[in-house]
Length: 155
Image (cartoon, one colour):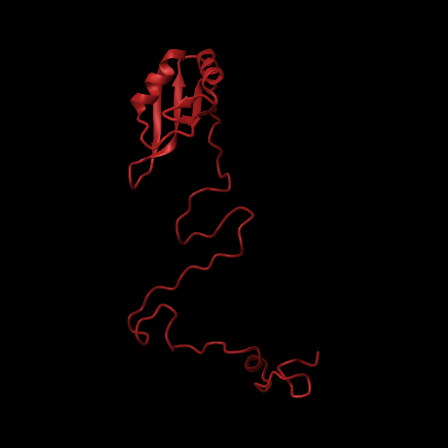
């Protein structure tokens, strides 16, 4: 795996043939993959270049790191293998969030129903909404202080 290079900071106009010609002077290039956006098919700014041997790949790293290619300095290093479930894994829309570091739980949206009072996604008036802390606790709706109840419990 030490014969595959990550090449970053490419221009959006870079093609596989441009990258192949540039790196061919450092060794036998077996494969070039310029990564593209799946919707626009525009280059994403990085590529993977595979050489025949690790020595050729290391020679390319030593001679191209920081050098200018199509007006931009290249970022070149030996590609690391893709890690499984590295926190950025793809998931379906309704699947719960995995891993740590997320901001709270995931609550899937309720389906759209056209028969619930105008068809809004919040559910219309088919269920009561919570209006305030005071009503839920049974106190009066005066928030002026402790004397009037104010929704504070005695426990």
